Length: 124
Image (cartoon, rainbow, N blue to C red; front, side, top):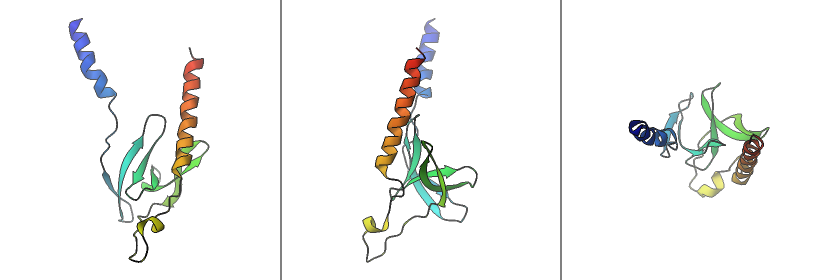
């Protein structure tokens, strides 16, 4: 019995570990490079590029694309993610435009969380 308890103390934290929070690199099919971080939790997850764009990996095209909200889920938009390169005349904030506003993403997160909580409470 003691061994089972000790084994569960070791296994449970390993199964519940968060995703890797460091930067990751990916090479697009066209040869361009993407550096991103994974964000989110079990309710909603996405990748965020170095320039703040919300991107998602499209399994069909095998590339990172800008994310968009469709039917209360975060899905690839079909538009290839291209890293914005600021020119000397423009500041970085003017060259980078977020295609998906972070407030909309947070609203979607709240909707998904609330649906999950309702489902849990109705099953009791």
